[in-house]
Amino acid sequence: MLAGILFALGLAGLLVRRNLIFILMSIEIMLNAAGLAFVAAGARWGRADGQVMFIFILAMAASEVSVGLALVLQLYRQNKSLDTDMTSEMRG
Amino acid sequence: MNAITFYIAAVIAVVTSLLVITRKSAVHALLYLALSLIAIAVIFYDLDAPFIAALEVIIYAGSIIVLFIFVVMMLNLGKRAVQAEAKLLEPRMWIGPIILAAILLGEIAYLLVTGNTGALAAHTISPREVGMALYGPYLVGVELSSMLLLAALVGAYHLGSQKRPYPETQDGSGEHTTGADAGRNSVRTGTSRPAGAA
Image 1 (cartoon, one colour):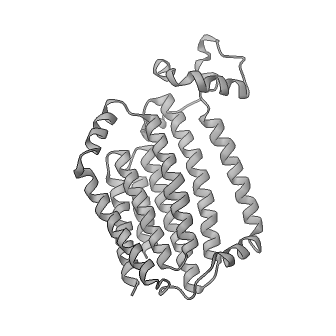
Image 2 (cartoon, rainbow over the protein chains, first blue to last red):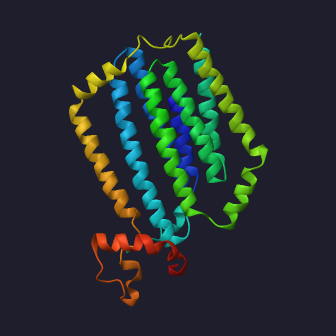
Image 3 (tube, each protein chain N blue to C red):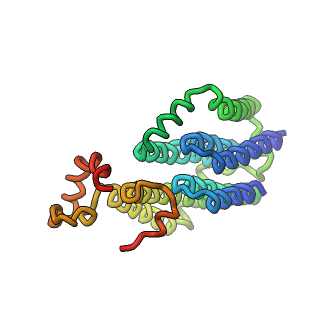
């Protein structure tokens, strides 16, 4: 249930904020919530699978954040802004 | 008994997450995000997964937060950031994080002293068990995540290297510097360029 609340918070942050940094943070919160659900389920049934899944989520979150932040830097250099609404005007 | 610590940590995680998505300044939000991650680490400790708790602190609260902070520093939003920094030094800004962190510290100390973790879990899952599962049935997943990390490394390098030629080829200057050379040259010169390029 806590994982659900955290996931909902992250989703709300994702929808409400218009700043790319905050959107990435919200994605972190959501990934954390998913990992928490996995670990809690693994602890509930006494299996190691949940923790294995959490390690995968961790690897994915790390790579996702690095690529995402690189994209943010690139967008900031081009737009001078972190607003996602400006990014919607992107065209080749 | 440590259902209490679980609930305290859970409340802290929810509150800090709420604060993350409502702060105006990115640095404050990062501060609270770090606290949220640490609270979740305490929850993992309560769930009798100390290995995962350590990983959470090391990788999330360590590297990912540092990555965020570096990017916020590099973006460096000018005068507004300076004002925010000045505000950050006021003690009022530190009260919230300090109180929450102190509660978490007290919880960790309590758990370490009493040593009764795992009331919420069926039995302790040791890192050895996790490792056996990881390299047993999940070997394909390990390989896949290694490929994912490699792709992320290459992708982040490529995206982070400054200025592919095309934004400034209107004057045709940097047209035939391609590939790695262009990236490497402009990493050095590029930091002062975006002000003029905009």
